[in-house]
Image (cartoon, rainbow over all chains, first blue to last red):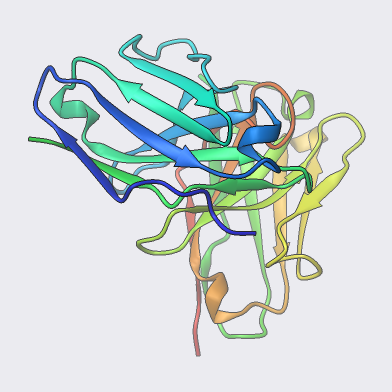
Length: 110
Length: 120
């Protein structure tokens, strides 16, 4: 099963807003509200930022928000900060009872 | 504090075996579905296997099915991954992760990872 499609990189200046897309199919993103987003800094384990498309776990800043339309999910980061510079991965439950991840998006704060 | 600590990684030859462990602390392992996720150098994460909390049903990624086996010892709050018939492409950092709700989703706690290198 192919990975979900994410842009390789997204950049923005401090204080700006950015959006990362994650495109799948009707067998994964489009079929279930089980999209998660993870942030990963170099050499560290991934960190859950968004669950179930748009839920923020306790302790996650409200600058992070998630949404979905059809087969595409999105992660938005508002008020971009230097600490947001990291790799971001989406994941989705699938109709085959498996989990797939996106290829990852490198966020650069200019 | 909720923590996961992996161990057991190392260098192994192609065709060899390895057993990874993941010790949980700060929570009761038996109440959560648990998952192994791996990440090859410079690549994105790849889901490997999941075991449910109640009936210990298991699910595997296509690339590891029949070679890797996930199990849990609730009495010791420990998760395992038995890895047989290892291939060069299994080289990766292996993370264990907890689902805070549901199965195969919402991994709210991750270990620090253990590196498995398959090479001759």
